[in-house]
Image 1: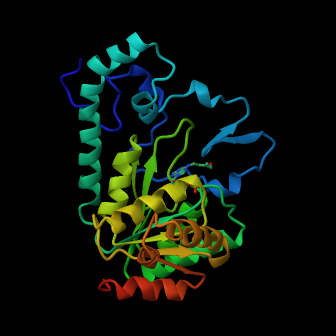
Image 2: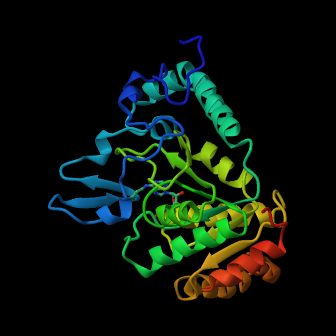
Length: 293
Ligand SMILES: C/C(=C\CNc1ncnc2c1ncn2[C@@H]1O[C@H](COP(=O)(O)O)[C@@H](O)[C@H]1O)CO
């Protein structure tokens, strides 16, 4: 057992295998990777296991992230699982704590921020990427810092828009079972090992959420924000879905099934705005809070 709290980017006394985790240093800029431009390009085969992008012969099951070591012990025997829980999990709290401390420390001075969620897989040459850039630029134009997951696709697009417009462009990256740097448009970046710590930062440091078209990851983040507003854990947070065509099926389903069967109140749908217009997004967000210029 270690008596020293592990730093978020240091070796893992809990599990030495974490040392080869491919973690970027906190606050580092990306290495020039544009992420989206790499989707499916080049001669090497690229495939996905969930949100995990694998190249060539890479095997997702062979790679462990800190989150996975913590949450998923299905490859262990019952005795090993219990031994791990007893000997290791209590010490993980120190790492988790240190990750909160690093996040709080790095983001202390952030004010008037908007978190932008969206697909990690969107190509740089797409209309959706262009929308993401315009969203980032418009938010920077009204004095909002832009926070994203720091990855490729629409996260990169929003960071790019914010950065090009001279705004604050924040990336909260996550350790994944393959090497990934923060996108090159992030000007303030942190890499997290634990998803749940990172999610706290998205919510704690922003006053509005914009969700661009996305998959499971974006939906997870969207529904977490919706639940927090619905249960009044956070208040007055506008949630804007960008892309009427993309989101209308989900909204119809919510109206039909969720409201229709009493799983949510009709007024719960008022928590969500949906638009194609970046100008309307700006109006919705500024109506909820002061402009910081
Ligand atoms: C799949 C690819 C990269 C994955 N990299 C990610 N980096 C950072 N954040 C991510 C990544 N994947 C998902 N997220 C989070 O979920 C949202 C996007 O998920 P979706 O399923 O693509 O909608 C996003 O907001 C992030 O916070 C490609 O190389």
